[in-house]
Amino acid sequence: MARVYNFSAGPAVLPEEVLKEAAEEMLDYRGTGMSVMEMSHRSKAFQTIIDEAEQDIRDLMNIPDNYKVLFLQGGASQQFAAVPMNLKKNGKAAYIVTGQWAKKAAQEAEKYLDVKVVASSADKTFSYIPDCSDLDIDDDVDYVYICENNTIYGTKFHTLPNTKGHELVADLSSCFLSEPVDVEKYGVIYGGVQKNIGPAGVVIAIIREDLIPETVEDYVPTMLAWKTQADAGSLYNTPPCYGIYICGKVFKWIKKMGGLDAMKKHNEEKAKILYDFLDQSELFKGTVVKEDRSLMNVPFVTGDADLDAKFVAEAKAAGLENLKGHRSVGGMRASIYNAMPIEGVKALVEFMKKFEAENK
Ligand SMILES: *Cc1c(COP(=O)(O)O)cnc(C)c1O
Image (cartoon, rainbow, N blue to C red; front, top):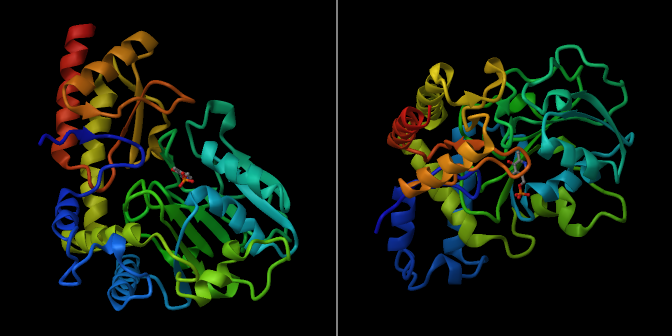
């Protein structure tokens, strides 16, 4: 068995310890005589799994009691619709567009309410985060929306926007649990877990209780009304049981690693190795403004598409996988999520040095 260093943007690398533990429990989960995949979501064993998962993420993120934690399906993309459907009051929302995911969220929201794009970095291919300290936000918007870490472009909001008192809704898919978060600054946080937490198929939504409406408009599917899931403890219907079980294991792994402060330190250390190399390289260049760099997704280019392709192919042959940039931007991208060991980043930089020497 040979494991590679997997730099995929998602689904992405998971902690080896978690995978091994899941393998050990595959046929007989703790004396139940069955796999978690095979058990009723109404069983005591599964209830314990989901309760512990919720408690562990609450502990990790310090989630206040007046926020619900929901384990949902449909990907982050499903929440692009659920957010406007549940938060619609005046029928207006402000979106900050810093990449494809924010743009898609804004386009989806337009189906249900009036969307005003109050800031965008589209003018420079989303290579920076716009100044959001004094935006022109109408008084009657229902919420202000951001994608906090831009997976494709490799930028991150290091300062949250000034929402002028409006609720902040944030897609944290690709930075979930990568560093501490002050949950109280948000009305809604959500993210697909397949970037930094677990297997595809689970979305975690953290929603302040007063933002979960008692009633929604008739057109809203029962499954997309947050209240449905909040009232049922994420068990209105069959949840993605196995995915939630793995998320729970990852929460415990992060706790064991020292929590989100330790994760941040670990992630900063890894990112620094790669960015420091990029900053002095004569061949490779980072593509985003320094101040807005993501700790999770690091895009870079050589400036020559053929050389980029050669790099990706040779890296793969050397056990460094999934370094191709997103199909919309090209170049390379190294996603260095929580579970990427520092040795993986060091191996990547060593390989880049060698490639640079051979291809200058
Ligand atoms: C991957 C990603 C999405 C889309 O997630 P799905 O679960 O595939 O719908 C949305 N937002 C961000 C920031 C992402 O990285």
